[in-house]
Image (cartoon, rainbow, N blue to C red; front, top):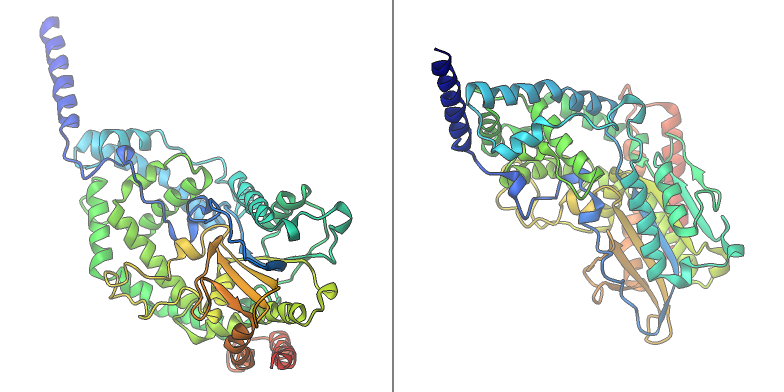
Length: 478
């Protein structure tokens, strides 16, 4: 009798192992040689920056000023995101149960084992919400060192020259990124003093003082009328819901909230540790990661990019600031100007600036219905506003040619081939022609809507004063 029982157990084990081995699987992420690494605004800067090759040396020209706007480096999720990611622990157990007990899942054995060993990262505690991670510190240090290597004339000064007069630093909510960048540049997080702006800042976070921007955003969210919502209701995203739910072994479609939590875990963990893959990335096929990336591109296209006129107007203060500094340099007021100007904010401010300048603009508008047609779109948040994303503008003085003042733009350390410029090198006179009218027409009083309850008198005063200073200051560009 004991022998028969032993034979029965052995037979069941053999049957179970054969069943698991032969389980129908969609793909095996753990065996993927070329995983998809573009995770929209949570993409690791390590995968997208162009710093692997040196910046161009401009013959007969010398750089005299560098101007930069950067988003924060890799950081931890928000408190709300942390709660949702930690909550995946129970979902993980359901997925394992679906595979091991019910036999309904379609993940391969290695992916399932990696998921079985997953537990929430130590970063996922409320007190670390939105705090820079070690990778984020490294992002900023290395960015600073690469810029220093490319522009030693500007960024390798003597100790006596490292002052707030020569190097201007300002931040709005990205202090740790600023200090890490400064440490990479000068070897100390406190090498020079810096300015930390308030919530009413009209330079680095102009959109936060704009009642119209906030109200339009809120209305879009409440009525579910945004392109992102339309895309989620479309066939591509609905098929994603069905396929992921089936892959994980569920007989019903799981919620979009769970899709978002798994996607966030995948991309945060990949950005935190660029040399390893998150088990939660195995939940999605490459095609599904394309879809999730496009959904976020849509979101930011209307939130901060070319989808709304208000977004370009909100980029005006930064454009004005850059033009003001460059105008002084062009008129040989070099002694009055810092050698380097470095601003640290967020991806919305950066995208507002890109939009008013006209960088990475597509001929066709992104919509919920042209996902396939926009496969080669310029507006990809993975490439233009990842963690540590940045726009650098360098002003050159040249010894030859009719126009001896030049400007070069770099986005994520890649040369921007701006229309009307020669292999990315722009004549200053050309840029003045491009931007003067934009700056004069960039009136932020559009933000003033007295009927909006969320508007405040203090915001109106700040916006109106900003408008006055912009129009007055930019009159000198003509």
